[in-house]
Image (cartoon, rainbow, N blue to C red; front, side, top):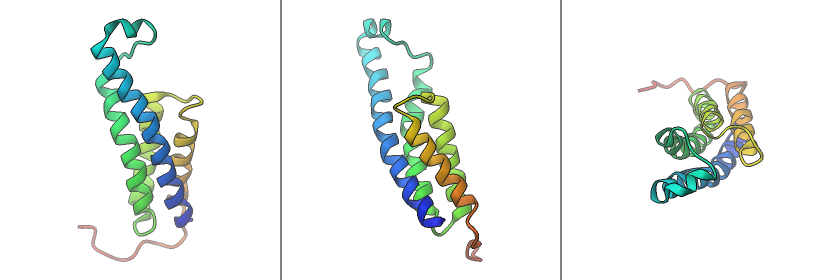
Length: 121
C-alpha cells in the first residue's frame, strides 16, 4: 500500500502542477489585462495562487514520505486533495489529481505495517 501511495501521490502532484500552472497563469493574466476577467473572474486570486503552489507540492512530498512515514505522508496527501478541491473545484481538469491524491492519502493511512519506532523530532 505504501508503494501505491508513493506512486499515486507523485503522479497526482505532477498532474496538479499542470492545473496549478493554468490557475496561477490565469490570475497573472487577469492582473495584467483586467478585460480578461469578463471571460472568467477569480474571486480570491491570492488563495488560488497559494493552492496552485501548495497543492502539488504537498502531493509530491506526501507521496515521497508515504514509504517511510505513512501517517505524515497520508495527511499531506489528503491536505493536498482538499486544497485542490477548494481552490479549483472538481471538474474534468482536476478530477485525476484530486482523486489520486485522495486515494494515495487513504492508502498511506491504511498501510498495515506501522511506522518505524523513531523520534519524530
